[in-house]
Image 1 (cartoon, helix red, strand yellow):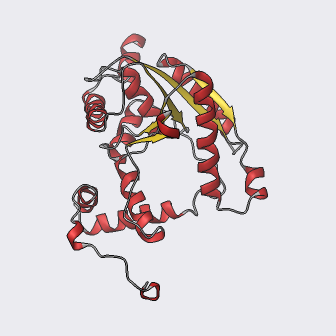
Image 2 (cartoon, rainbow, N blue to C red; image 1 turned 135 degrees about the vertical axis):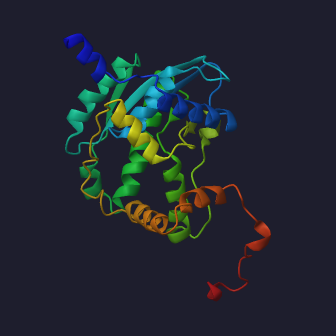
Length: 261
């Protein structure tokens, strides 16, 4: 009876939904030439559902273009509330997938007090620097982040509203003359798909712990898109399609006089 009960409670790690997500990751990898034979990919884990599921998807490998790549995981300990619990869980989680786990300390609260720039910018910048430094240390040349389709759409809106430009994140972005590449293989996956699969696989997730987390501009843009989606169910699809359906002839040229801005 106990054995039967355990089988019922244990999720099928190769279920239909997971295989669909893997196919979407594989398609993004092929579309944007993300992984090359011999790459050492380091997945940035945050304690959220997105990066944890990405690690599981990449750990499966079976990518049509190549399975010849090494996989590692890294957690940046920022000193926020709950970071110790995150680190302990993620170490065990990565181990269960057979992926080597690394951690690096980058205390941010003192940085917030010392520097006057916006906290989200500082946190993002310092985490990236810490990850690049550690990647160089262990010989990783590719850093994978768990940004999904909704993140790409939100970034588009952020740049329009606050950056005065029409752009989003790059799915495959070289840094330092190509020494490193940052890839985002979950480009074709909706956040709702991730949430459902994380729940099915019983992946534990943690709040960010950042005291500024609920005040940032991305949270506002996320709410804005969600409100528009409630009015029309195809809004998300339309926003995503707009990022590869560009008609330059219907855009403007820069005004000859700055006073026109």
